[in-house]
Image (cartoon, rainbow, N blue to C red; front, side, top):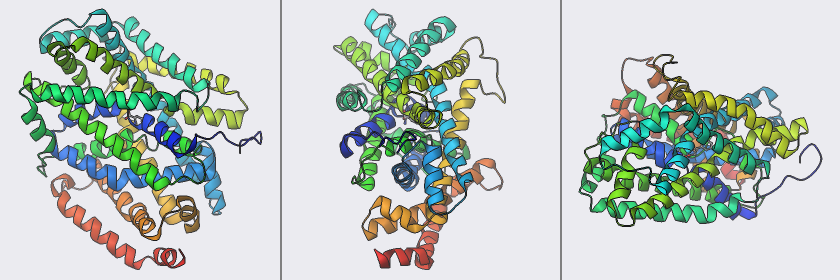
Length: 487
Ligand code: PHE
């Protein structure tokens, strides 16, 4: 219920939620960020840890988040406070919700800049502005695109406007429908690119780069990046999934829903890797090129393939749409909080949010031109927004939620809300009590460099210890035995 006593709006069933949550999860994180950080951290080992983080941390956290949202019927702050109060615990735990809301907002502040790149490349494709045939030409195009704050600012402002326009119009209209054609469209474009990559001469190198899992080659920073990216790509701990969960009808299965979203998201990311790296290796590019990676490589592929311009236009159109369906989910928490607590109408809440967003995102945009030297510890404002949110705030928020669900709140709360059969429930509980929190803490401790040994080099051992501890915890846990007996 909102403060006005109206029942909250709901998705059109479980399917509507899956579409919206997939729309949120699949975005620039899969197609822009996953390839470039995989390149930066050296490939296979990073991919393996990322996959482990998706399934051992991401899936349980996502289930917990959806359950919080549906149980608490509100924005992250309100929902968490209600659920915590229901168990007689302190409202101060809603700090986890505040952090999530802030995090979604911070992510959007730099996301609109990257989405702006995508829109500007769509425009270039349409108007023939992507001429050039070498990696250097493409790097020059990317550089020129960033150099002028007015043009770059135009594109990020456009994305901000579109996002706030859609959010202002309400949750259901548009979102579900656009995802249902955009997502298959995106997959088709990736298939075309992968097909092209197979004949480009770089496919073999790409496959072995992505899937040769040599353990030990990953730095502590890479480990933290893999964990952070699992959160980022699934839209976790940033208000998006929790708020969407509050619109999920009661009867829908949270477990199955989560698995569908996580699998779809992972498939798209791996496909993006298979689409992009062949082009990179065939053209002798450096996979660790950084944030410009896809913008410097893909146009080369489109130029070389038959009907390339058409495919290029479609690709950047889909990518821009995918970015928008993610962007709208990032402010949904803030907007719904403003509506529920400050009595604002949806349009007023979203335009208000949009103005603040525009100011911060403009600063982030300037990191690529005027503000390129405004750095702190070698990072620009844009870099800091990305670094703080995905490496620290998201895993920390996720940790807060699993600790709440696993240890602090009454066990009935989540058993009721998740509605799982005994075995899957036991699995979820083991994950949220042991595997996810320990995984997050170990990676944090490693990244902080508190100990001299690098956990990254010893991860197979650590994985074994985690599993053993989970098994031990499970046999000793009275809560679990109680849960199994009474379910
Ligand atoms: N998951 C989105 C992507 O991969 C990004 C996102 C982060 C969306 C946080 C919502 C919240 O592009």
